Length: 434
Image (cartoon, one colour):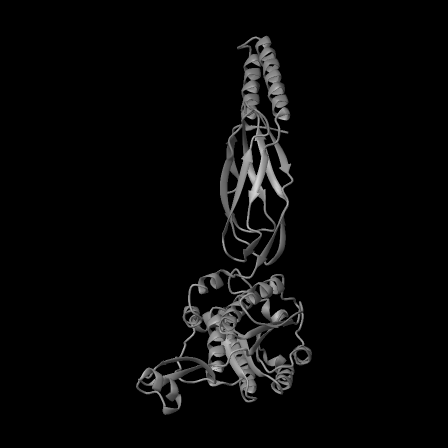
């Protein structure tokens, strides 16, 4: 229990009264009587505060929330006895997550639930615990305040940002691809798998005409074909030191997970099977699965994955993938290619190409683009620009080495990654490369 601001002002006034008595302006008895009265009132007020029951607190919060997205939480308070109480409320969030609307001052009345919302933004993925709720009760005369903690433990799981997936559910697979930003080229009459019969259109080849159906319908009917379904896509994610960089509030690895979810969802919508392998820091393996239910499995597999400050062994990752994935698949490696890693990466890619089609998405730091746009006015800036040019030259040479081996290479920033992955996946499907 600690003194409130009201008691502090009362003690200050009592001290001034004592100063007046010391100067002979008032009798000393006035200071003594007022001090005794203040002490009695303060003791009664403190005793009353100590007897107040702790209010009952309930927290309403989803068990699963996306990282980096502001969310609402609700706190409900109910008076613990027949007395109203004024208090400050602060929820004990995990870590240093940004929060708005806390602490909050309330007056809790018996028989009436006091409810308020606050907003917070999860800054990390994984499993976290809200340890409790901290209350600071104020005495009836505001002379004292007492801090109490309500044990209100609740575990939440912070997943990669799955909000775009909910939005994509409102669109067809092709429309969702456009929402991502991918350039979708329509292809008619291509593919190897029968899709539907439709009325003949000018430009259809004679091979598309179904003559039996045309005879029955008394008009020309064409067959529509779609790209083959039930193919397999495997996301190979680097969880090493290359993905620890940040361009905004999220790390590159968080952006990689979000983009991987987008391309996986669209591949599942198109009837393909999607798997995932993480290697470097945290390791994880999920065999390719079909159906939109696989999205939940994928989320549960990757929600606590983290990049670690260790070097990634690309050859080891490729060897493990070859052992686990026997069927031919589109393997999308998401990493940050550096010239010092290129020999190891080239060896790993050649191994994977024996069985699979390989695409390497190389993340580029946004700071590089900003640095290229900046003016060079000093010798220090000139040295920095020269070092940047050398770095970009080495990076481009590493990418060219991969392309010379027949590897699809994407040199993109975090913002460009989702659209680039989706666009490349669709291009592979259109070209029948699997």
